Image (tube, rainbow, N blue to C red; front, side):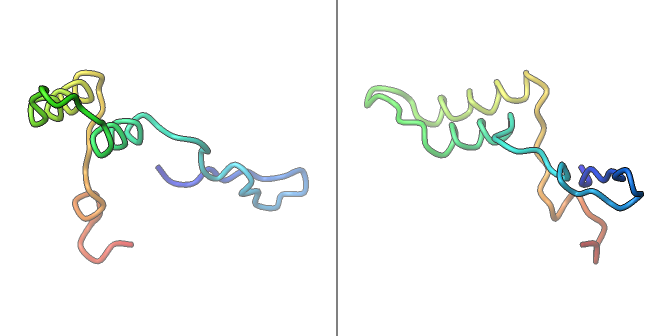
Length: 74
C-alpha cells in the first residue's frame, strides 16, 4: 500500500505514521519458509509446501514487485 499521509494542525504533511512498524503476516510466512528447522525424519519439501498452503488458506497472496507494477513503473 502507499504510505499514509496526514496533515498536521497547520496543514503541513505529516509522515510520522507513513508505514506500519513491526513484522507482518507475510513476513512471518517468509521467515518460517526460509529458516524452519525440520527434524531429520521430516519430508522437508512437503513441510515447506504446507507452510505455503497454510498461507494461502489464511488469505495471504504473494506477488513480486516486478509483477505488481506497470513496465517502467517505480
